[in-house]
Length: 114
Length: 112
Image 1 (cartoon, one colour):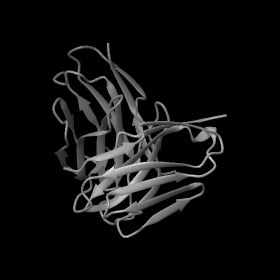
Image 2 (cartoon, chains in turn red, blue):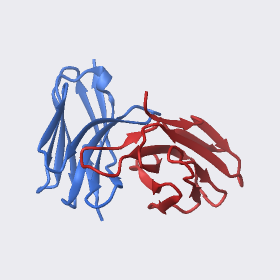
Image 3 (tube, chains in turn purple, blue):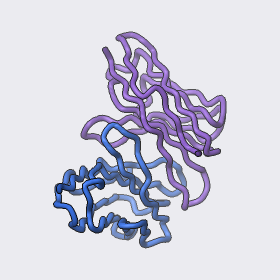
Image 4 (cartoon, helix red, strand yellow):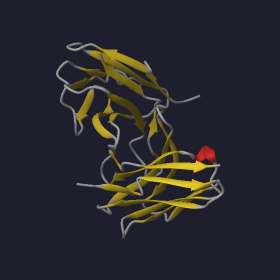
């Protein structure tokens, strides 16, 4: 079945560590996105990519980095510069053309600073 | 800047009741609007997508409507069940771009 796989489901980070969240899709979607979700707040866009080897900052990119070396993969690194990384992270993908196509989301990664 | 608001923030209803969730957006130049469901600790599941040229979409007990000119969408759930308990999110895609802007959601609880 086609879909988006995020791993790990739970991740614990020590102060000063960089951690990488994985996102893989087999939907042949062009675009991929990373969102952060905090209690009581809507989803906020971190980074997005519409094509391999290209990506753009979203609304809250500081302290995060991404790469898009393959169409299927869009990993997110939470760096030590992100001061409040504890949150639920969601990856999504979509086609680029056509009004009839929406987003597909993964199951999320919960990151906790210990 | 597009802003999306969902009212109410939380809703508790008895099983079997028909209910309406509301979503409003400030910029009517949208490409489409998507309704999602999120269970606690889970990702988002797409329920319905309404293109900008459409007025409504239906799937089973769910019906979503779109009024672009007034910047509103409603999600109608018929004959609610305890399994419908979840957070419902609406999101709009602006014309000319692919980014979604999300509302903060309505947390629904359907009680026996």
